[in-house]
Length: 201
Image (tube, rainbow, N blue to C red; front, side, top):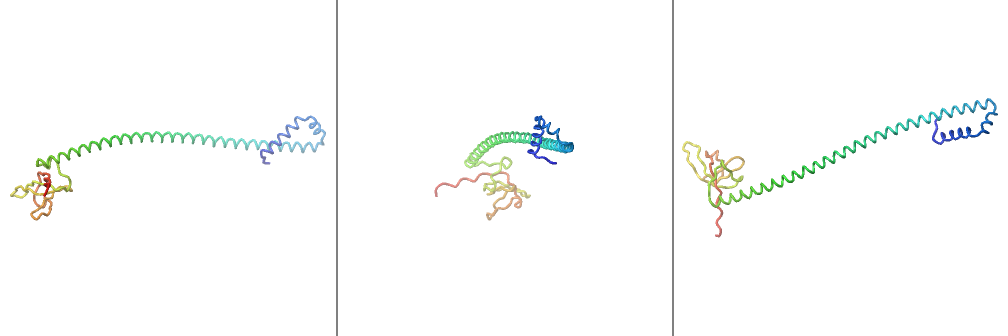
């Protein structure tokens, strides 16, 4: 027979009452033998039920202990993961700060170089100096004055409006159309910024 908590307590209370009451024991001793046999059988049945109940409680307790142990291990692992993620987050913040600092320095450096190049371009505009293509190239597709050397047998040099872009030079031909120098049998050797437009009328 399966017991619940209340039934188990009831059996234990009856055992306690029987053992603590002398009159009860004497009354039981005066019962007919067959009645005593029935009581003993009932007592044995109650004892077996209590044993089973205790076994079930033990199993439940072990199951609870096992679940608790699993939860403790899980909690420990979660704590480790939280700690690891926290450390990674701090590391990411540190790397971001380093990157931000490096980026600011690089922007400042590039800004300074841009200012320097702008000043150099202005100076070249003012002085009209020729720049070798081996030293520096103009901004992509920006019109400049160029000196080109012919690649044909006759050779020769010419000056024209040209531009550089896409890895190739282009020059204006006789009718002003921009053509790639490789089709015009010329190689650009030097270039110069175009002079500023004169002020006034």
